[in-house]
Length: 121
Image (cartoon, rainbow, N blue to C red; front, top):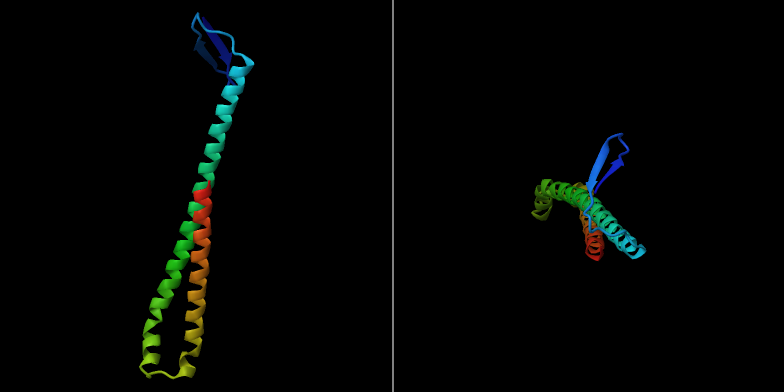
């Protein structure tokens, strides 16, 4: 038997139904609904994971930027350690470097928390 269904776009969809097919029971309907719900939930989990991974990548980019800032000021830290520049001259750079390190640590904790969320999904 051929079954024709009108589609939303105005076209027609043909389905071939075998002669030995039976009518769908409520149990069948419940089974297929459960399967559809499961697929939807998995798709939503995958979307959530993708969004979280994007956030992690952004955070890792920020960490890279902060580490570049530290690398660019390493020579001033070495100059201070060798006594070439005074503590007064180095004070602003020192506090900025400490702030960068603290931000890196905070971002790394946030990344770990997001990775834990992914693991739990």
